[in-house]
Amino acid sequence: MNTNQTTGMSVYALGTGGGPIVSSSRAGTSTAIRVDGATYVIDCGMGSIRNYRSHADWGELRVVLLTHHHSDHIYDLGAYLVTGWQVPGESFTRPIQVFGPGRPNRVPALDAQHEQQIAARVAEREMTSTEEIVDALLDKVFASDVLIRMADEGREEPHEWIQSNNIEIPDSAQACAVENRHPQMEPFEIYRDELVTITTILVDHRLCFPAFAYRIESRYGSVVVSGDTAYSENCIKLAQGADLLMHEVIDLPGILATFPDGPTRDGIEVHLRESHTPYSDVGKVARKANVSSLVLHHIVPNTPGTADLATMLDTARQDFSGHVFIAEDNDVFHIGGAELQLVATETKGSLV
Image (cartoon, rainbow, N blue to C red):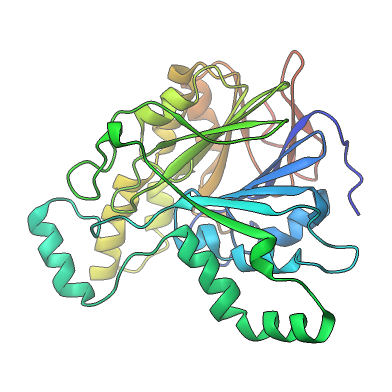
């Protein structure tokens, strides 16, 4: 049962690990933002659902935001959707909204020649959309469970409780999966209720297009979650003046040291180098965005002892004079007041 404060704005680090790796120390990436008892979840990484229930009830959940469709960001999506569907005492109290990428009209590629090479490799495989993912979970993956529970327990149609939305990128951005994956653009609004306004923008996650960062504004303050991205001027624009920036970070030498030599390692090195923000740059992002506090999460590598957390923290401090934290699972940050507050947890070493 949730025992946290029901007023104000707080950020909950439900999962702080990055990448499709099973870690004994960090759940997969996921962040919950609670405003006056309503909860908005960004990404649904592996194991994060247990941490969600440590901080919030299903009846509080209003929105799930997906930054992109890499597996480590959606592993627990089905659990979030089905677990809160009309379980006595453990149920959604209103239809929840799921927002995320739509299906690109072309397979993302570096250029036209690369597009042809990819087409030859992937054969008939296609990209998908958030709406299609949610439909597949409710109508295919969990189809037997849903049908039996509707028949045996009298539950209602789950699509009445779970409503999915593909984010439509404004035409003015002229975004393209091949020629223009990360265009300079303005943030745009995708959701509003009586408590928050949510805006988004495209960020640069190499071939993972579209990929989004999100900003949640309330009367108490503002929080931005970068999603997975290389250094991004769009993310800096979205985060201008925010109270808290949750930004991904990578220790590239640390993660590469965990891989054996070979072609697979060479391919993933290119992806990691061009898709993520090294700790040498993340403080610069926070400084340029003029945010109050920087929280590093989506830690790569995310297994114990592999990332140089002390160097990450020290390097970010050199470039950014605000408060800097490295989030651990279940850290809680209260927004508002003179400065960001990190609620006491078992791991407080990253507090500046």
